[in-house]
Image (cartoon, rainbow, N blue to C red; front, side):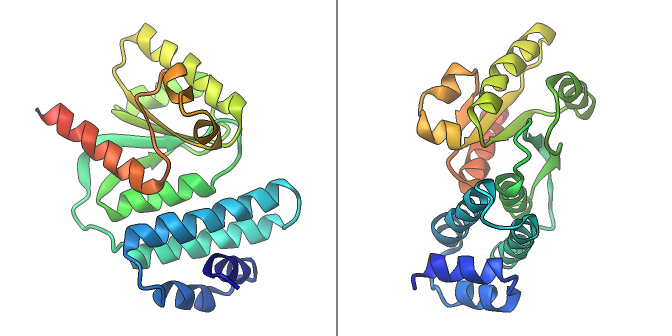
Length: 208
């Protein structure tokens, strides 16, 4: 059994100790463990849930265990940055695994980000962004309709004169590498590590 399959089996069995032991013996650096092992396994578990092959409790426990694994891989930075003010949201997908991974990664790198949850409409999202003075918005998507809503959100930002960077990620953007540009996003990330890199890039650009 390969490492990914073994980890998936342990996660679905809610075996936290065994899952941690698998990660500990890999000998890979932190970013590679996350990108090559944890993220693909969670994505596969998410696919199983979408197909009705596993219970909601299994996907929930898998996410919780992996969040704890991320904390052990990437010890939190005690000096949380105050800028940029970032937030992450999903629209109607009701799919939180990818968002959870990104939030854990950002926190571990000392980047503060608000979690706006899922199922949030644009009408409710925009006032929250204004109130929180968000500078960078990350949007996690699972289905194409959610990805297309980003075009409407960008138009709303333009109407209000809001200069907010939009970073997108998720399956629709991996399938169509030009989609992020078509919906008006500023960047697209393939992983949680990309989210950190892109936020830092925008921060450095603002500092120039």
